[in-house]
Structure formats: structure tokens, C-alpha cells
Length: 114
Image 1 (cartoon, rainbow, N blue to C red):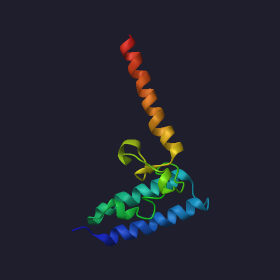
Image 2: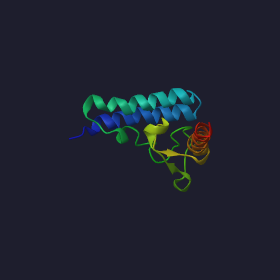
Image 3: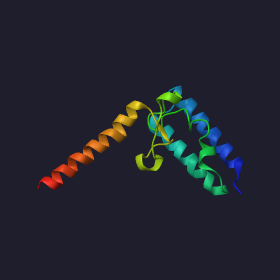
Image 4: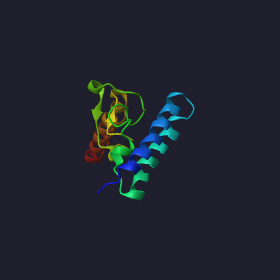
């Protein structure tokens, strides 16, 4: 059985870090590190990662931490792209996913051409 209290506690830290980021009290990378630490912190007590980031999971870009509208979010594998939520804004998707796929195709073409 999962411990919901640790998820709620970590979520309150994530919420505060987002507030500090939006008020420009901390930078993007510091905020993302806090979020990742909170996600990982739930494992001290059999928690749920998604509960730890409940305040941002559906409505913030996992890369730039901008607020998202549901119709403008794109779901990605959080672990593959090293982002803090499952969703990206269109700009970050272009940067992280689309450009990576073009780079990989270019490398593949170079390797097969030799």
C-alpha cells in the first residue's frame, strides 16, 4: 500500500519551488533539481511519484516549466528526455524531440553513406 502523506508533503515543496521560480527567486535549473529531488524523495516511504508532482503534472511543461493549456501539451517519456513532467510545450517538443530525431537521421545517413 502506498504512503500518500509523503507524496502530499513532497508536492507542497514542488508547489513552493514553482512559486519561487515564477517569482524569479530561483532559476529554472534549481527548480527542476528540487522537483526531481521531491519525486525521488517519495521512495523513502513507498510513495507515488505522480503525487509528489501533482500540482504541476498536467499543466506545466516538463522542460521550461511554463504553464500549459491542455490542448497545447504534448506527452513524452519523462525518462527518455530528462524532463520533470510527462508533458512538453510545443517549443520544447521541437527542441528536444523533433531536432533529436533529425540529428539521429543525419547520423544514420552519414554512417550508411560511408
